[in-house]
Length: 116
Length: 109
Image (cartoon, rainbow over all chains, first blue to last red; front, side, top):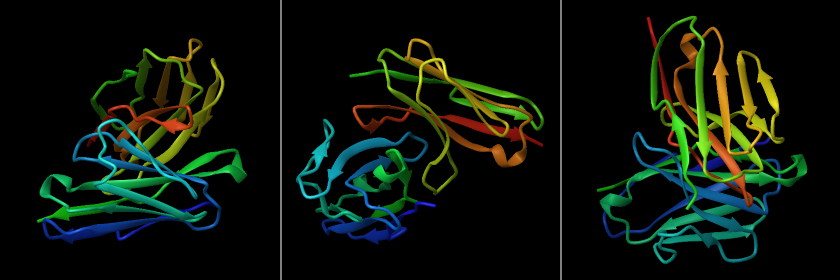
């Protein structure tokens, strides 16, 4: 079945540095991917919608200059957390829409980011 | 913005009991999805509902899409230990999936 893979699964970075998280659709093409953030014991909050070949659409309150999203191909979207701070530590989850199966949306396994 | 209310927030039940949780909203949605998430993992789709009034089952799980398109419920029958986790309702409108706050299911030994 369709699989969405995220890399890395977990990452620890120093405050002030940038970190990139990849989201790949492994056996289908995804023109649209979504990025969520989840803090401990909270729900998933949609950050942005990533569209292949165009700019991402950010939800209200999400800083687009801090969370850079690039969807350069039909199977890869990246989220770069720039100048990361401890409050950016969170579980980041992507999902991808498979138009080939009636717009079914599949979620990745998530990426843990810890900023120290 | 749209309000999405999921209840209960948590449940403590005995193995074998039935479980019921629901979501209500002030907005109309085209699709209601139910996901389960286990610690440290991404959410896994349990049931997808596409039509108002639709009642769908997946094994011991049953979910319904409310007639008004503003609510949905999920039932789990004869709970087992592996049902432990967080269950999210996730309606879809304008091609975006929005998550409820989740229902944490605990099963007592």
